[in-house]
Image (cartoon, rainbow, N blue to C red):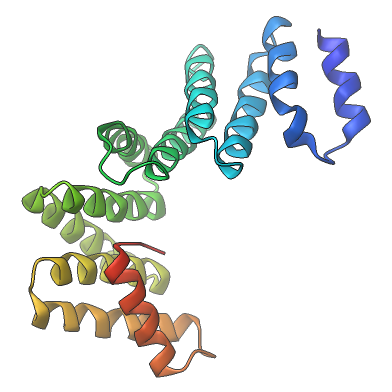
Amino acid sequence: HEDVANALETLYQDQRIEEISLSLARHYQVAGITQKAVDYLQIAGAWAVRLGASLQGIEHFTQALSLLLTLPEDTERQQQALQLQRSIGQAYDTITHTSPEAFEAYTQALMLARQLDDTRNIIHILCTLTGQARSSSRLDMAQRYSQESLRLAEESQDPELLMMANVSLFSLALGSGQYSEAVSYMDAFVSFYRKVHTELSLDDAYNLAIQLGSAGRVL
């Protein structure tokens, strides 16, 4: 099985490798080369989601995660587990924005991001969980997540993270009818966004903020 997988890798050489990623994963799994099996299942999951087969993608991501957890625990394993949990959550999001399975996957991803002290992923996941909690009417929880994301973004002073946190709070305030607070968060988002994207006009930045906030999306 290892020889077959190696031959397939050589034949395709990264061209359309997604199309045979599931087959490669199976061969490497049978051969006992677990890390490569995990990697190709992750590719197969992403490929399935892109093709609109989200449930199949979730199945591949979940199997990859199960195999990954049989490997020795280290930082790289935690990082890949975080990626897989986020991918599971995102795949469920393509089906519905109120899935308890997505919320659980993001919660597990948040726990891993905290263990890794990965501020960027912590903030991104907190913003995503804010939207999840808001969609399921858990507004107190959404408020806690959003405020933590803003605190961490302010500590980092990273304009991209500050954009992310402020647009999340803008969306939450807008959906809760807190319009004055929503305007403040929108103004902050626009200010930070234009620091990063200097070519964008003020009107375009405000239009983007409204689009993201109304849709409950993060960058």
